[in-house]
Image (cartoon, rainbow, N blue to C red; front, side):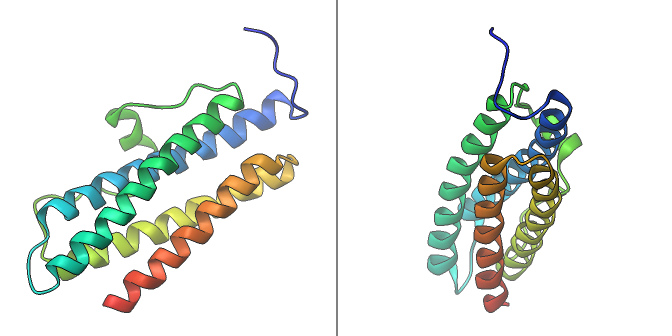
Length: 155
């Protein structure tokens, strides 16, 4: 492979990529939780939550690809196993199948956790003048803040 020369030094690329790895792990963990809840939600809000969870996990599926590709653009290997994601993610897995209202709370907490991860990554990207990573992370943060707001409205 040829030498990367995109105007960001290796040390900064590593720092940004490490943050993006955490964002990828959080996003993938949230994707799995959302998909699980989509499959297993029951109760009076079944249809509304089932469809909303599908919208959310579909969007997250695209997001994880975008984040992983940005990591690769920085010339760093993207994590891709459950084991790696478990180590990097700030979102804890859920045991069993919670009731619908608890699913909403869990996903709300997950989206808020992703926002916090985004804020950390955004700082390192901005400090390195990495506008591409900053734009990606900023867009992700905005989406997760909006999704958290919508979930908060349900509880």
